[in-house]
Image (cartoon, rainbow, N blue to C red; front, side, top):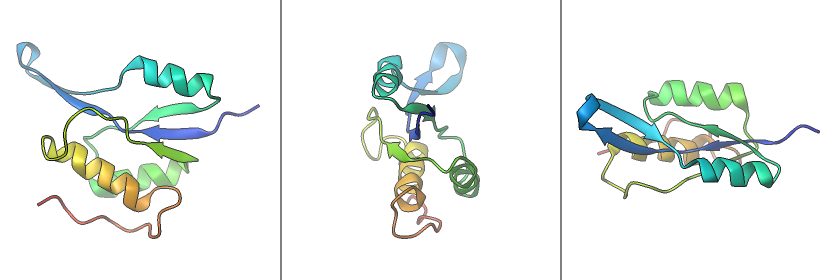
Length: 102
């Protein structure tokens, strides 16, 4: 039996010791989704809006989970990603580009 694919947003972590900015997802969320019969597909915050829309089009997810993590306004890339997922994902009223972060 095929598991429904569900996209999952990720928090942004800054790792100064490695000069890196990482997208991160607690493995327990993926494990919980798997136990619920779902397949979690993490979404990078590095995608431009046009690439995010293409990603959504290619994967045709059954749903979206906003995973939590950073507060709204702390990480503009994450805010943009989650707005894009909500505006263009399954069940959205419109599959158009969301407004840019201000």
